[in-house]
Length: 245
Image (cartoon, rainbow, N blue to C red; front, side, top):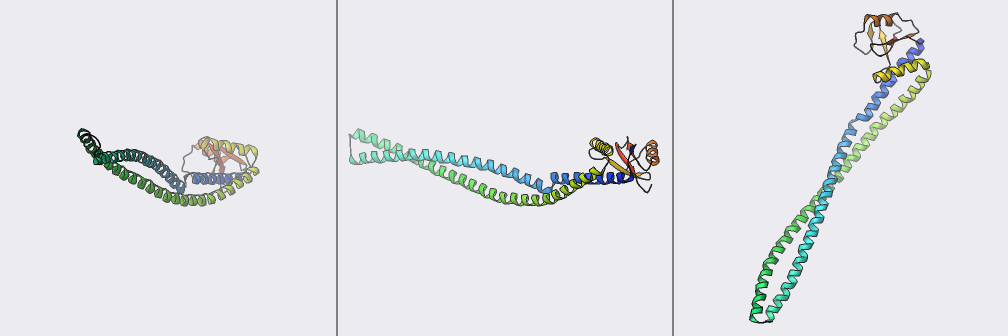
């Protein structure tokens, strides 16, 4: 048993109500639906940023490869023009002119390959740039959704936070009104049960709980004095008997 006046017992029950509400509010902060939505959006945003980085890298690869092929093509065309001019001018022996013509034929085939390759790379580059742009649009839309979710979360948590601050202040006031030994016993019980420090007994019923106590426990609860609080081993917390008992 713990000594406690009826007023102290009432304050103790009020403290438990406040502590229960504080726990509910803190759980609401951790589990608000808008928070889950925001986390999902942030995950999608990270995925899109990785995809965008990959697409930009591909754009860079396409540009470098296209530049290399275009440079090869420019050199080939320059040599082709030079050799065509020599052939047209009839420079060299018939054997030399025959060799020039053969080389020009080879260059024409190579030019066709390079031109096809350039077109293919340009198509790939256009596709890669389109993908970057599309991902950018998705990121912009997602950013707007994130802002909405954040605003909703801020508003919701603002209300929760305001009530939480009010309840914490109320708790401090109630705790200050309790006897030190009684408060310590209450806090000790709460630490063991994960938040439950005191329950109220009305007749042979524990308020808010369906439980069967032993006859020994009920005897102790029903026979304790008005200025006593029962320490229940079975419930692992304090028990205050209702004034109506």
